[in-house]
Image (tube, rainbow, N blue to C red; front, side, top):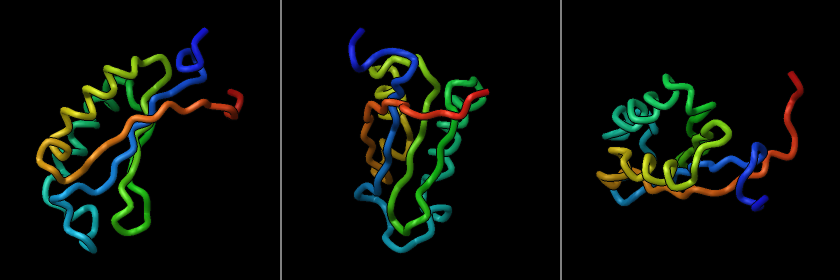
Length: 105
């Protein structure tokens, strides 16, 4: 098995401010953030996103954690289609994350 596949590997989307980000302005007031949330809410509603949200440090970006078993390229394409990425509010990076510890059900 490849180290980048399997039930214990997730492809996490990290967001950071893009060129249209207004430094020092609360993330909730950034122009285009509503469309960004709406975009990811579709995956949340479909059960494809487990959690997501901004880091609490000012201008630090945020992250989205899709569920297990989703293809990296599909996640990358979805992140690139984010209106906030397309309008320059946010930039993104997809990183493979090995889930080494989890709470048992």
